[in-house]
Length: 472
Length: 127
Image (cartoon, rainbow over all chains, first blue to last red; front, side, top):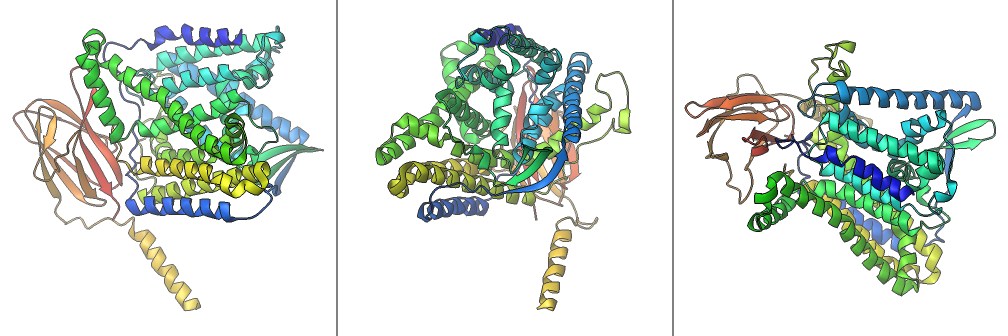
């Protein structure tokens, strides 16, 4: 039932995907300089050194449980804060939809909705969740409105089993396609139509199987932001008398007693691969591949029949579909080797170790998008002065220009290497702890394949950042 | 020891301030001639890439003048710095600016189908 709901959600939005006559404008570009060689080498060297250190270290594989309480808030204060965030989420949702439907159309930075969705929400909120925990849980307008409407499960028996989140996997792929490939994703009215279609499907799904089960099995955003929040050094815990804000080791939230189910592991692999493909799609290597594929499509008559736009979309969709396959193949290879040493089935090994890849992707995500968020994110500020295109000038910022000097390139480079190396350190520590817990005596040898995979993954992240950006 | 620390602190402060300092107003701008032929940029200062648009390397703080000559009328848009002008077949158009921010910025044009084509990349490197 929920799978049908997911398919219906995607099908209902198909008319919005038909490209307009003139090919769409490119969305915001990144202005990052390629990472210089010695930054790349320092990062790669640090990654290799950290991997060796982790393997050589001794220990019983218990992840560090140290937690420091920073702030305590009472129940009523927490309730107020939560209400405030929920209200903000719903109001922002409504305002953005109105801006998309009624606001100006034109370039990618003519309307508040695309800027707010693709930069402030998808990138900005992911940064916040990586630091401060699962803020989306409170900001989620679909959840809040479902609670306000008191949606309870009408047919809870139709929900997928507890560990089954394949609908979320499918919806996340569809969303990644909209983010990375869909040529019209900067068109505010089409984007608003897509959001409305998804909202209706989500509320129907929540009405049928209940909001909690929907968010666990079918909601790709809830799963994605929760995954990022597990890397965060800050988290809230319910205690007697209120809530406490805890500081913990980054990635400590990824250590769980139960290994993820196959579909949960697949979700992680898909999310990591799409984050990486976003960067690969801007490299000269991908431009060369695209050129060859377009030439082949031209020769086969596809372009004559359907046009360059459709051909470009097809090529990029193929890349987006192959990225998780490639990551899964590399990961499965490492897991098979680990399983042979540790005497465990490849599938079980994969589920045991998949979460230790998340910090590496998180580090890359921070490195890749910091300058983009700070520079292109400013494009939304003048749009706040007149979200509905009525000629207002709220806050007096209507004519505000983007300040491209806001962050120095050297700072960006240092930050990039620092977050990638930190992500690698956390990932290696998690994999080490998991191996020691599982394989005991054979832990040292068993870590070699996974360490090799992680070093390769980190090198790929550094390589992507060292490539000159090509606007395909 | 304390004097050495103070010296290091002063040097660091100067280095940090120095990265923001701009050159004097009277240094002549760097002039780069670019010829656009059928949407492809070439010029004496530009490397000839195997594929795609060439990359011009600049240093942050330089005054730059790009002189464009084109065989077709095209609208050129320098991203980041937000400079837009029209390169016509008969005259040389000039993009003059101070390369105040480091980064990799594309100069794009639109073809008839509305697709963006990058003709040149400007890489402004930190000093």
